[in-house]
Amino acid sequence: MRKLLLRWIVLAISVFAASLVTHALQLGFQVDVSSIDGALKLLIGVAVLSFLNATLGKILKLITIPLSCITLGLFSLVINAVVLWVAASLNLGFKISDSGPKAFIAAFVASLLISFINGVLGVFLPDDKDD
Image 1 (cartoon, helix red, strand yellow):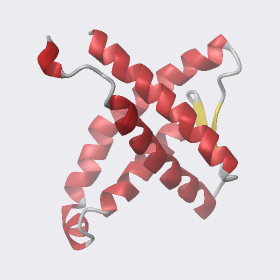
Image 2: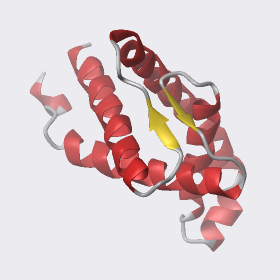
Image 3: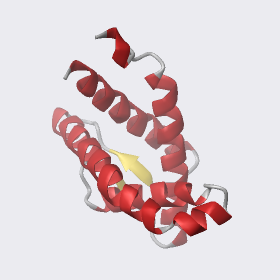
């Protein structure tokens, strides 16, 4: 249970850090943590993002296996961006304020950053074999 909580918090930190970088790049991925309510809403949004990634993301990756094979797996980055875009449309702690192609670019860059930052911070989490 403790590891799940730690991974949840690390993912929330990753989403927040990605919003700072995308804001510097003038993309529309935004996180509102100006209050306790905003931070709690972000944690709920991260839980929804994780759920969507585990369900919708897996289904989309299964459906697009031929396209992923043709692109050597790079199409999974597009699926991650779509899942983030869907989660951001629920406006639970984070959102994409742009529209059209710029919104997809914001979701794509944010999903790349979230994955990278989460991977880097995940190194500092204890292994499963430590139980």
